[in-house]
Image (cartoon, rainbow, N blue to C red):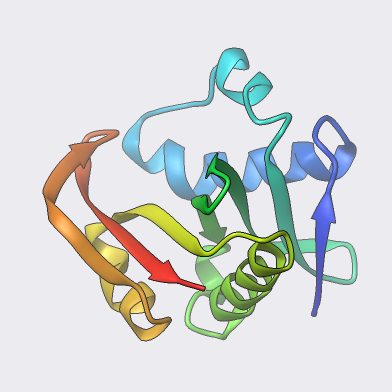
Length: 142
């Protein structure tokens, strides 16, 4: 499996948007707007590949000079539980650390809490609703 940074607007980015749409949005009856996608141009976009097939992806968004936020973590449904998400998380954490960030935060879906807790993330605060489903703020010191 190869892990790499991809460029906004590239063909790889379009594959990333499709994967995120299939895994994260369509099941909720939602889709990305052009404004949402345009706002991602300054984010660090990360993807996992096997040959030319994108297996999973995520992005990092700078919150402040010390903090980066993980967003849009998605792994193909038939490949979940096979280590792709863990590899993506480790790669993203290393990228963040290499860029001088000290903390990663996220809005984690309630059904993914166990995965993130295994990766060393802690819940911060109470459950809240986002995009129609329960989430928690989680964070990890790098």
